[in-house]
Image (cartoon, rainbow, N blue to C red; front, side):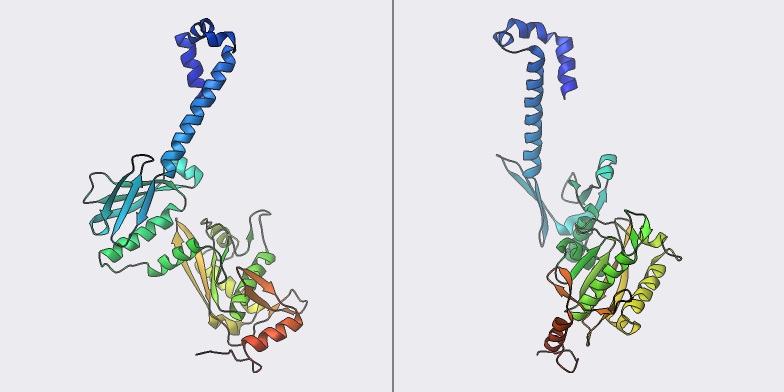
Amino acid sequence: MSAIILLVSYFANYQELFQKSFIGDILRYDLFLVLVTAIVQLIVTFGTFILWHNEEYRVKEKEITHRDGFIFVKEHSVLLKTVQSVEYKRNPLELLLNLGTIVIRSQGLPKPFYIRSIDSAEIYCNIIKDVVDRALLRPAESQKKLSILDLILEGEHSQLELKQTFRWDGKNKVTSKVLEKAVMKTVAAFLNTNGGSLIVGVTDNGKIHGLEEDYNSLTRKDRDGFENHFNQVLKNMMGAEYRQYVSVSFETIEEKDVCLIEVIPSPKPVYMLANGDGEEFFIRTGNSTSTLSLSKTHDYIETHWGQSGSQIITI
């Protein structure tokens, strides 16, 4: 923007006109150009923000609505039953910024909807596809996939944890037993509390990271290799008998694998080995995993399972 203003000023010889004006008596020309440039940039930035802030898409039960405008608000919609295709794409800039655009084509519109430059575009694209499938009474082929996407969008809570990797330390470029233990602590806490889901391959803020780094750290560099290693770590840290309460599945999101680990509550207390220094007992408190002292563990077990060690079930 500054370069354009300076270039125009040079060819139009605005400097001479400026110096003959009353403003030229109180302000230097170079400072005037800086001031004008700043004002123009501020106007462009504010205008862009207003356009972005006042544009809204909503997916409803039967239609998708698009609303935009600041003073003169315009709104139009498309029926889900008329949607022909939903896809997402990325231009080079969006690819660099990890953004994407959703393109919705419909029989009722001469031009498609463009939901431009949004975060997690493929996730929202798949959600819209599923809503369209329901509206058209088509069997959704990705019910389980949708549930994973929904979980990611929920963010971490008492029954959901997100982990970027299982064993690969990206900062130090090595495999890490500490990271493996962090995953197992969460699994043990879910077993000892009310169950829950752990998704590996997703950052804390919901970005899809994928499992490629974990795959490459294993002898068998694929889903089976990942699950086999997970089973071995769980066996070593907790015991093979608890694997029956844990299910492992994989999905591809944004062309990257993620792993969904679903845990149901254990009928008895689960202790985890603490690197040869005895055992630890973990529970879920809010959206974090906590360890209990020996006395608190005893009280928790009596409350949660009863003195017999069998889980209390209230009907």
